Each structure stands twice: as structure tokens, then as C-alpha cells.
Length: 276
Image: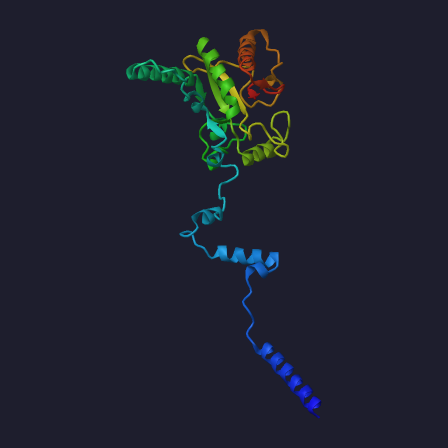
């Protein structure tokens, strides 16, 4: 009888303990006890609660990139205005020079670069209606200057020196060209001999090509076998001029020689197009 009573008392204690455990509040769960994926999500939620005042770098990272993919301003880190090719000053050892001598040397260097820049005449054909499309297709991009890839700067400097020695100038008709402009040109003239297929890409859209011609020291254009953007054989560098127009082919050949000697490459269908 006594054993039976002890057994029932023990059973009662176990039941009471189990009931209390079930009613007790659950313990706090730390992130260290969470599965890895849940702990990561928790950290993300906490970081999202921070505003720009407490975490400005995080807020900046969330800002969307609104730059137009073909906007010149978006390209400025890689594209350089052609005038800037002559802004770099030649390094001078000033360890034994006085300040006045250093200033004089710097001014002389700037004058030299400015004189080289003067040989370029920027006349963008597609920033006007005087082109084969009859429309200004650069206005919508606010593109009014010649931009080139930085890789063109060395050959441009060499070219500028060669032009200066011959008392000539270079007329620049086109440089960097936005992709949408290339697509529009292709829609009008879908001939790969004269307009690059935008699906394959163009050296102009990369800023690695320029369309040019020659002018005398006063800026008057030298006559060529054809006008710029002519779509016939007279535009080919191999075109043979008639006797009374031989000087036109001579001017074309001079342009080609100067460009090739400066490091540029030409194409077989346009005497004005060169790339690097």
C-alpha cells in the first residue's frame, strides 16, 4: 500500500513539472542559433533600417545609375575632347631653376600646345543638316565637340606636328558617334561599305575613328575627288582622277600619307575615314 502511494506521488510530480514546462515562456533565440540563411536575412533587414545619416555610403550605393549609355557626359572618363590632346604640359626639371624661369618654361610649353591645337578645324557634319541624312542628328545628344578615345592622342599629336610643318590644317567632320545615331544612319544607308552595321559595332561609336580632310593655313578646304560622305567610287582612295582633276587625287593622297605616317589606318571605301 505504501509502495503504491509513493508511485502515485512520483507520477503526480512528473505531470506537474511537464505542465509547467509547457506553460513557461520560450527563451530568446539569438542569431547564432538561426540557420545561416535566416541570420543573413536578419542582418539585411537591420541594415535596411539605416538611413543616409547613419550609413551614407550604403545610401549612395543604392542610387540608380541614370546616365544615358550614349551620353557624352557619361563617356567623359574614357572619351577626351580633341583639344585636350594638347593640354598636357611637358615635364620640366626645375630643381636648379628659379621660380621665374619655371613660369617662363611653362608658358612656352602651353604656347607650343596651343599652336598645335590650332591645326584642327572642328566642323561636325552631323551637328548640322549639311549631311546625306539632311538632319542634325547630334543635337539631341548635345554633341557639339569632337571627342575621341584616349588611345588616339599620341597619333593626333604626331599628326598635328606634321601638319604644322606643312602649313596645313585638318578639317574634322566626325569623331565619337552615339549608338542611336549610328542606327539612324544605317536605316538610311544600309550599305556596310559606307555605314557600319550598328549590330556589329562601329569604330566611331567607340571614339576610335575620325572623318577628316585637309585645309590650307587659312582654313580653306583643299579640293578632293569627292565631297565628304559620297557613296560612289569617287570616295574610294584608289579612285583615279582625270587629268584636269589630278590635283584632287594628290590632295587625297597627301592626306592619306599624313594619317598613315602618324599611326592611323584607313579603309578602302572612304578617303576621309581613319581609325586607330
